[in-house]
Amino acid sequence: MPLQNRVTPSGDIVASEHRGTFTGNRGIIHDPATRTLLNKRWSTPAWITCLCEFRGWRRKVMSRRSWTELFFLDEATAFAAGHRPCFFCRRDDAKRFRAAWEEGNGVTGLSTKAMDTVLHVERLDRGKKRLHPLSIPLHELPDGAMVKANCESYLVAGGKTLRWSFAGYSRADVAGPAMLLTPPSTVRALGTGYRPVLHPSAS
Image (cartoon, rainbow, N blue to C red; front, side, top):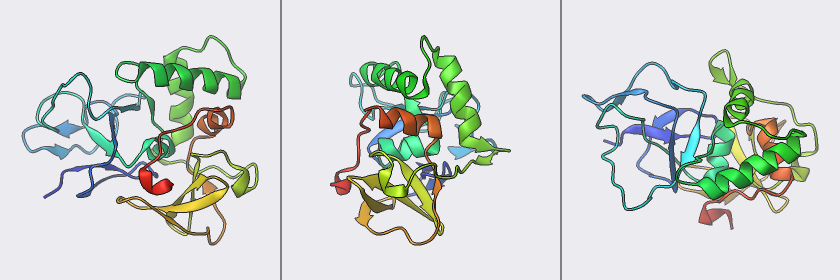
């Protein structure tokens, strides 16, 4: 049986046979004895996205009292759920993201803790995923932004929309009114030039 450690664009953590191209965490949210999730879905406001392979290190997933390994289809999915790049295993990407985030949001000298505080407010609404109204037309959103419409999640890439699934993306137009999944501050970072790593199916 697959472990419950796969993250959707809405931030839900579910079981899926598909592993994804990025890992990450929200702190310790599992019981290593049973390798199952606790009732809580985060233990820190630092929600990060990490490389699946780094320096040859290997971890047995959810097997010890350490951070809970979560998996994402790609970086756009992680962004939509409210995560950011890790400053340890993805230091260069994290520095580029922070620079784009500062430029897009009109701030300078931002600490990682301050950025996490803003993201935490934007990602959650009383413990559930916060959706945001679109401030610009859907197809003007920057590449890598994600929206939700009629219970489906969509990626914006190249002015087109792609329907998300655990296995990858498929070409599909958005039917009905859409709400923004990706936190607005992250969308502004995407708008200033940060390019998230997308799943190969996005192309």
